[in-house]
Structure formats: C-alpha cells, structure tokens
Image 1 (cartoon, rainbow, N blue to C red):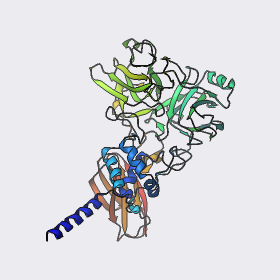
Image 2 (cartoon, rainbow, N blue to C red):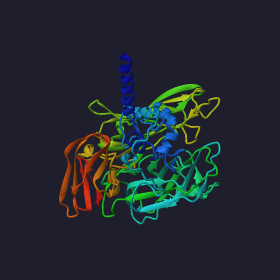
Image 3 (cartoon, rainbow, N blue to C red):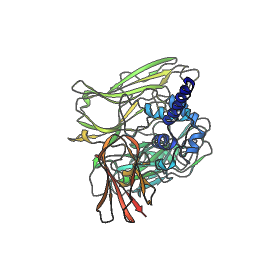
Image 4 (cartoon, rainbow, N blue to C red):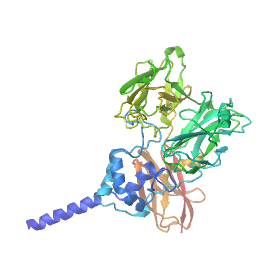
Length: 529
C-alpha cells in the first residue's frame, strides 16, 4: 500500500511539474516578441532569428545563459534608478519563464494560442509615407580591424522650416550598421568636409561630425523604437539645411555594402508645434566640469559636471536623455537636485559600453524647475585591467574627438516648460505623435488579435496589456449594434492573455470585436460563417 501511495505521489508530482512548465506559444513567444525579435529576426542586426518555435529551440541553451547573466537583451540604463520608455528589460518573472521552459524540455504548446508574429519591414517600423526620405550613397564598409564612423551630407531640399515629430533610420544592410546619428547643418561646413574627403562617399569622423556648428536631430540604435515626440512637439529642421548622417560600421564588416536611409515625419505645415532642443547641457569644459577631463595612464578617476546657477535656466520640460563617453568610461549617472532639495533621477548606466548607447525617452515628461542643479557623475578606468582600453600599455588620455580620446557629455532632450507638461505620458505601448496605425502594436507585437478568423463557433481573443486594467470586450454587427458583450469592465492582467468566447447563434456576416480599457480602444474585424 505504501509503495502504491508513493507511486501515486510521484506520478502526481510529475504531472504537476509538467503542468507548471511554460510552453512556447503562450509563455515564451510573448516575451521574445516584445523584447528580442526587433533585433533577432531574418535580416535583423542579430546573428539569428527568434521568431519561430524552431528558431528558439535551436538557441534555447544560449538564450537561457544570456538572459540569466543579463547580457541580453542589451539595455544599459538601470531600471532601478529611473524607468525609461520602451525598456528592453526582462523581469524576474520573464527570466524564470524562459529558464523553466528550457529546463522543462522546451514544449511547443498550442500554436493557435500564440501571439501574432511581429512583422518587420525593410522599409521601417513607422507605417505610412514619410514626408522626407534621405538616402546615403551606396557605401562599402572599410571597417576591418577597427570601427569606422562615416558621415554623409545630404541636402534636405526644404523650402520652409519643418518640425520633426518622428524619424527612424532604415539600414540598407542591418548586418553592418551599428548605430546612426543624424544632424542638420546650415553652415555648409560638413559639405566642405565631404568635398575634401579622400575616402568618398562621405568622410570619416569619430565622435562628432567635425564641426560644432550643427544641430543634433536624434539617433537610432538597433532594436530601438523610432524616435518620436508627443503631439504638438517637434524638432525644427530649417529650410535649406543639409542633413548629416553619421553611420557606425563596426570592425569586421569590411566589404559589406550599405545604403541607409532616414525617414522623417513632420507635423502639419499649418501647425506651430513646440520646438524640442537636443543638446549637451552637461559637457566636459569649465565651468561645467569640476576639473580638466584628463585620465593619467594606469589610474582611475571620477568627474562631476553641473550646470551652474549663473546660466539662469528657466523652467524646462525634459523629454529624454543621452549620456556619451568613449572607451575608458565605466559608469555614468545624471540627475537633478531640485530647489526643494529633492533629487530627481534622470539616468544611470552602471556598466558603460561604448557599443550600446542611444537616446532614452522618459515614460512621463519631467519638469525641471528653474534653480535645479542639473548634474552628472562619471567614472573612468585607464588601467590595463580595462579590456576596452585602446592603449596597451595605457597612456595618458585627455578630452578630444578621436577614438583614443575621452568625452563626458549628457544630451538633454528638452523644451521650455508649460503648465501640465509633467502630466504628459509617453505610453510605451502607443507612440504618441506617430501614425494612428501604431495604436495596435507594442514593440511590434499586435495588442489585439482573434482566431480563428473566419470562425463558425468559437473565438479566441488574444491581447497584450502593459499594465493591469479593467476591460470591456464587445461584439457589434455591421450597423454598429452590440450583439454580444463578452466582458464588462472585467479585471485584465498585465502581459499576454487569451479569452475564449462563442459566437454560436449569430447569423453569418462581418462583425467588429472591440476591446476598451482605460488607456486605449482597440478593434478587430471578425467574419462569422
């Protein structure tokens, strides 16, 4: 009897453990689709795709190892210091789900319940026709054993000033484009550098673009969302200006051919949006920095920067931030000490990696009251123990534009403050100011889908919510009359969920399924046969 009882217990534990093992369809796919496949798709910047079950199983052990040590997905900002919009950060629950899936035998699950597969276009993430497209000449990378930063000057052709509400870079060859910075130049200085270049097309320039008389329009890194601004905000692009595109081609891409293009979306020409400025208010020159940016060989050193009160900055609205250092940098943080004495955290990067840097927008706009002490602190390692040190043996390093020089910049994305700005939410599920078609997507994954479609009897509703909410799901006919209410102000959890309903008894025809929450209204056409 005891043996029989033991067998039953073991059998129960086996079944229970199996029931607890996440599957690909409903457990793992939603995580990878939202955090990984923007890079890991066919033609993406990553070396392999994770769009399908077969792809993921092939690399399951590597995935488990990389996410466990937080190597992937790459996201330099510390979310415990300050949250950013569009974070590529796996929660402890996400990591445990993937680990348990791998150790549990990588079950596939019911693919009918899997979330819609993200679709990545070679023509960019933003749906719609750009107002302006500039494309670099066909360029063959020369980056053999060292990185190449090539600048391309392209006339905008604008006859009047326009305001950029969204833009993105679309690599001609994702395998060789590491990141892109975009500037505007009204002086002709960059065009002159390009004309004098001995390595056309374009000209090489590490750090900046060879002149300080340019306006930074923004940047792009693989896996990032298009750089976008809330409604009625935009970055000014002056008429007649040149657009300067700096592309980073990493070492080992020699011989690869690229033709990156930039897509600009403007506010309506009849609008007068609020001008957004992107500039390094914190930089490595006195009186901003506490001492000369110089790191002697075989030493480590910290520096501090602060915008002095003498600058007399007015109330500002902060939309985003972008720190910048070179190869000796180890960590950097930026924050504001408010007139009240409280500290407002902007960003902290604990393990600086020159190859993974970008612009980070806040999920909710911040007010910087006049009198705020805007500060930054950074730490550098110029010893042989720093594997990124470009010099062996180490040598003295000072501020400068070259690869072996150093920088300490913090770009702030800001505009003059207006009452209520601090209440503007930049929803990471819906990029405000971008075309309406983005409303049904979160990091490329559709938020609402139904299957089978067409259907005869049952209907599986798939949805993804960034945070818990109350939801109402209704079914209306072609006249707009509600014929079924599947959910009425019901509690819906954060993350991916599925709900099964029946349409039995409804006449054949075209219907609209609507999901309404406190933050969004999503619809999907459904055919009942």
